[in-house]
Length: 84
Image 1 (tube, rainbow, N blue to C red):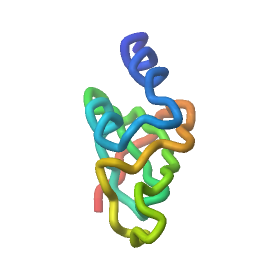
Image 2 (image 1 turned 135 degrees about the vertical axis):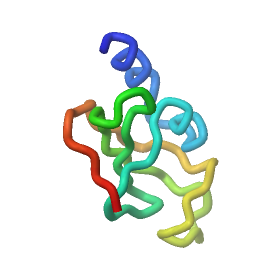
Image 3 (image 1 turned 135 degrees about the horizontal axis):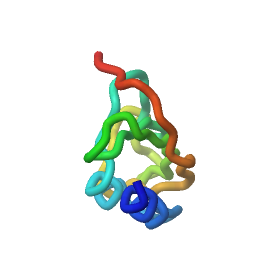
């Protein structure tokens, strides 16, 4: 758990979506390019909510890009997996 918390602490505003995806992966459920739930790669029950600043102001709300940056990340929490 301490390793996971250490990894989470490194995800700060300005971190790119690509960097975030090295530690977390996408969760099922409703999402947009501006907001998504992610699960930790080693434990899918550990989740975070992430808000993004889109790389291009004209970008579609469904167009997730590697260069989008984290604007806000929640504290990790535990929850059952969602599979669509």
